Image (cartoon, rainbow, N blue to C red):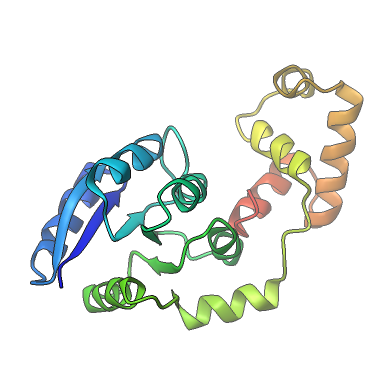
Length: 202
């Protein structure tokens, strides 16, 4: 049986290399490759892949959001997150979005090929060390609004700019920032955003 694959990665070199690597396998056929998260669902509808390999950080729509839409609109396509970022928070969010596999990009080629075959056969495939770290770390303590505020602050925006962007009052933004700083045990919003990002909470 041939396993039809969709690749989504914003780095063309990575996408091209991955396609060439997977095409070496007799039972794989790469039917589509896209560079933006907002192209994933249309490509899946058109080409009907069995498995989609999605990067997390992509323009248009990140891989986690794309996985959630794919799970809802093209449920026959099973999703594997393929990412540089082996962070426990990302793994938890990927599983919540409907992904059934999570492989880091520095894994050996045979590990990726095995993961694709197992996922296509109906299994869940997650790196055991990352799974253990995710269980140990627990869920993200940040609320959706605290995540929004930290994400908006990563560009160096002022409180007034964040308030305008998110349609909140400046006092409300300060409250969310203060709460996020407490939850991340940091000293300011820049550190809070960095720590939250490192843990895969953003």
